[in-house]
Length: 393
Ligand SMILES: Cc1cc2nc3c(=O)[nH]c(=O)nc-3n(C[C@H](O)[C@H](O)[C@H](O)COP(=O)(O)O)c2cc1C
Ligand SMILES: [Fe+2]
Ligand SMILES: [Fe+2]
Image 1 (cartoon, protein in one colour):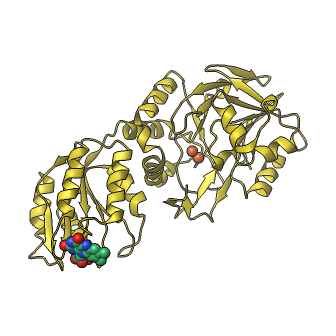
Image 2 (cartoon, protein in one colour; image 1 turned 90 degrees about the vertical axis):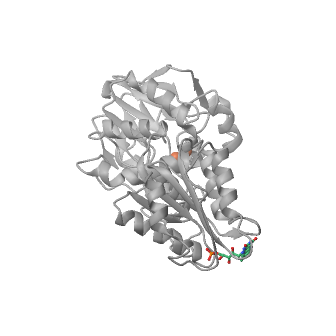
Image 3 (cartoon, protein in one colour; image 1 turned 45 degrees about the horizontal axis):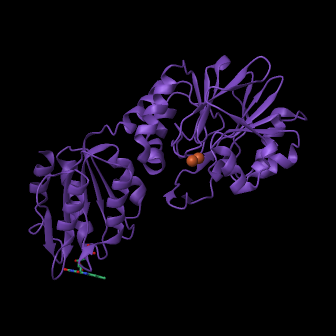
């Protein structure tokens, strides 16, 4: 538990054991499920945490409230990492009402069989009075689910933003950001955005427009630190990413069975670095150079303007992890990238042409026919200096 202000308490938890978020995205630095209490004459709890953390969550609530009850449970977002303790809370607090919106209600019923009489349905701009302050509710549909809303506490210029402005990475005991916090979370915030929210650039832009009328001094999201010092940086990063704005640099994403395509991709990365070109390289299958894989590659696609996809030919097609990467770009509506393909084959190479066609269908600028090379990697077959100069343009 951490007291954030006179009225606001952090009662969230860190998850250091889960390895894959949403069953897909690696968590090398853990993740937090944030929940907040606003305690006034009336008490509101904003979102819950994932099941499995009941004891710690209840201890935090207890530490914040003592034997006071909870009047409202505000549900900004129904994804189970925040909602899976709702039934538990309804049982513990029989007088507590859930506060959601018209789209929350059927999800509550479908997931948890929540009785409608326990739910108060809010419309855009509606508010509840807590005594000396009130909470108002603003819909931000598709950031990143349809029922998503934010809760605004005007008296403290604080937005409880759900997953918006969230990041992977467990929080320290301070919870609130300090000097350097934003810098240390920036990459993980980009990875969270690109992996989870990346498809919804337009809804994020609409949400940012809505917030731009408010003088936000504190952001309490559902994952990662509470932002006070770095509110402008956090908002600017979300604005940039949701406009798909990138800088010059290269994201190399490869898959490889026997290391030949990997060797070419890694040699290209080394050459780019040698020439001072910002560059990131990710092994999508993780069998040659395990790392963040697809998750890290997507982050760097939101960072850099040039994509190199490298795949061996596999049954006349693209090696499946690389195909998944291309589909992930399509799903995130990535546009306007510069593109180059390469890969090894043994008897008839087709992966490079297929990657180029895929890239063209996404509207990418395919910089050159690419490099399809037979069997083993060698510097003679793969002139990485030449590829680097194509990529530099
Ligand atoms: C299951 C499987 C399917 C393959 N299909 C093709 C193919 O359709 N055409 C081809 O030229 N080579 C094919 N190959 C050969 C690989 O493309 C070749 O071994 C390549 O060098 C592998 O690159 P890597 O070392 O980056 O995995 C196949 C290999 C495997 C294991
Ligand atoms: Fe979510
Ligand atoms: Fe979440």
